[in-house]
Length: 124
Image (cartoon, rainbow, N blue to C red; front, side, top):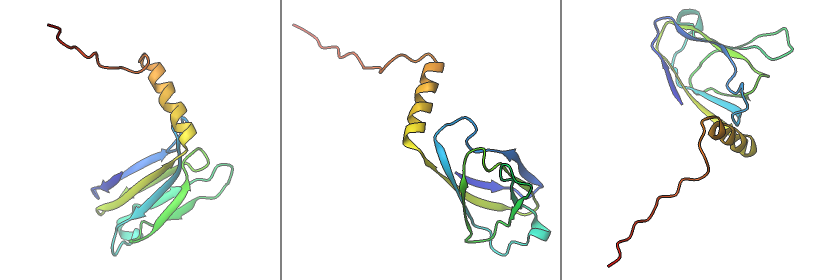
């Protein structure tokens, strides 16, 4: 995912990337913000590690790579940004959990089995 916060005070509320066991296990964020000054531009990423009374404050500095667990262990939010803020996020998936999530989704939407096209041939 490529994210661009327009710099008008936009942020992202506290959340967990994988709250429902969708397969995402590791979140990787790469920042692309040259000359970023968090005191002027805001846009701080805050991580609230589960069961801890501390907050990790991470500035979205150019060429910084951040890696953390995608599940409830790391709720996080982006504070309002007052300059255009860029980040690329990649998630690494657990294959078994992802397969189970896809099957659960398939069943909840009422999809039945594999759809196979009917081959119609003409007989003369």
